[in-house]
Image 1 (cartoon, rainbow, N blue to C red):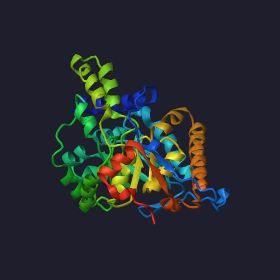
Image 2: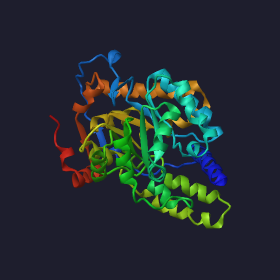
Image 3: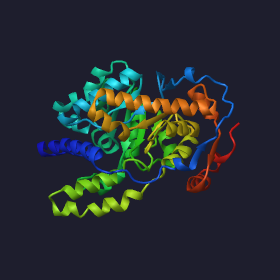
Image 4: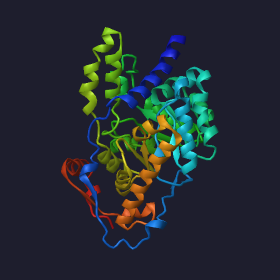
Length: 365
């Protein structure tokens, strides 16, 4: 058991290093096919544009959400601390990485609890895998919430990653029932979160039916965990692991593009967090116009988070300037006004939306 705990922790550091150093992005989010209609007479003052928004009963200063990245290894503590300081400074929501390692080994809990220490007022989201929830029950979820004083908990779905990991959990049966049980037994809002393959409208309806309070779509087109695991397999000294390198490469193209997944899920209910390949404030504006409530970013914030507080603050300020500029040019003085912004959607993205959910292509009132 001790070896398993050490392995879980070291894997977290591997993931952080690979994401920071290697090219692990794959796919096309579909945002290139989405164009916000320019408003030549915006009739609003760019200096007074309001980025504040409401999510699960909390007021946030911006729809930018710091997506789950790390934790669970001593080497990740400072990154989480820095991300949390920025969340507090800018009034952003923040999620932590999977807390499995700290639940297995409480000595690692401070790599997560540091986020509440550094961000006493921020909206924080705990994180536990659906398989771990199934195997360990509601108490593990409650402990994950207590560990960081969380305002919500994300139950992440990462079955592509599990499928190609040599040590992955390959049995997904019972996970839906576990999520439904958690939603019924915990007061903390439950967010169901994908990790790079997107969520379809069918699965979204299942999640709402189970009692989920929000969905994080985690669409295809950003960080590919298939690519990350392919790198890990290639670096392994185990010959059997190395054979999994091509499996990761083969599945790097698997998933629902973020723009398409967002349109599908937003058509079934809300609130929705858009994530997966969102790279700037213009992407955020497009997601808000497509129905997102928050927009999660991870990889674009990781490298500055490894550098310094000021580098990370500068990146957030740049994203906000891009978002404000986009809102101004749409005539949207508030985040909610972007819901009424008109969009042109073309190419494969439009085709997929038409095939899967014709309603999203109708003109907005």
